[in-house]
Amino acid sequence: MSTREIHVVVVGVSTAGISVAKKVAALAKDGFPNLRVTIIDKNEYTYHSIGAPRGIVDKQFGRSLFFRLDTLLAPFEVSAKPKHRFIQALLTNVNSKTIELNTGETLAFDYLVLATGAANSFPGNVNAPTLEDGRLRMAQLHENVEAANNVLVIGGGAVGVEIAGEIADQYPNKQVTLVHSASRLLPLNFKEGISNGAVYKLRRLGVRVVLNERINIPADIQFDGAVRPMTLVGRSGREYTSDVQFLATGTKVYSEYMASLEKHLGTTLREKNGTIKVKPTLQLASDALPNIFVVGDVNSLPAGAKYAVKAGEQAQLAAANLIAMISAGFDNAKVTNLVLQNWNGSVMNMIAVPIGKSLGVLQASGIAFGKSCVGDIVVSRVKAKDYFVSKTAKEFPPNANA
Image (cartoon, rainbow, N blue to C red):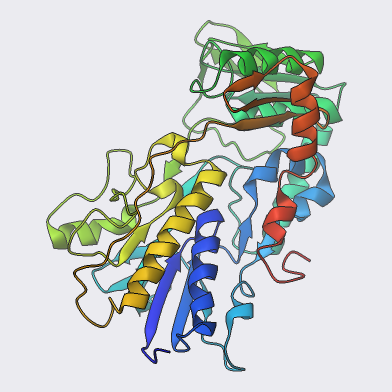
């Protein structure tokens, strides 16, 4: 048993942050009673964004996507006086030994995990600080889509396909249009068979699928799910009229908090797209700060390593390395012979995309199930039944999303 005072701070509490925080907090009951974990997020909840497409058409399901963060680490307390802590705040600066929050609070850390993720348009992200505000936004979105006659989805990646499929399946009398800039749907690193299958099954549901078209998006347009009748023009000159619009293209990471540290170290720690550079161990790419880890969408691993499954694998690796450092006493003395695990470089080679409740496309073990019913059967049983929200619920104490 070690009586060392150890403070681990995890910023960003979604897929990767949840996993790292729980695994490290468990050490408090396993030989490190004075270890404490502080989790920080700008919202008072984590949002299971994978389920957003279903949440658009199912109001009760939309409510179930939000989980309170203040109880996440309660099972790992060692006494009646809590050591672990949740802070609702935005990270503004990372320094070599402290972080600064928009609340004015400064926290010292022994180890820091940055898992601040990436932002995309609503409902991929919900810009609402409280759980009830988030649920109200999703409920309003449901009502807006229900009231619309025409829905436009811009972007034919997995999320765009799922949104279009869910709306068309639930509301067969609405005109749903999916516009995609590439020559086929879904990420290009997957086989063309699932792309063709997605087009075929969306059209079966009545979705108008337009490929090789880029929408000219005015700078002032807000993709907030409001009923806002408008006509947008594609580069082809064709017009697309809709009542509600969804933008399902691209993400943007928030890493401005690294600027002060970069200035202090006199080096660039971020790629041009804002992602934070990491070593194969998922430590920050700076020999001066081996006690900082970066996991999930905000790090510089390739896009194929950013799916939820891979984020979970990153979290497992980072937690294992962090625990190895704690066990070796890295925070208390200079340790030179510690061997850490490396990321194996793997990227996602499997994808399951629901198209409504009973259709879907699948690629697994290099085999594409596009137009066939095999994709429908597997995807409806594996993902479409609840978009894995029940799996996320198991990460939390009971009633975290009550």
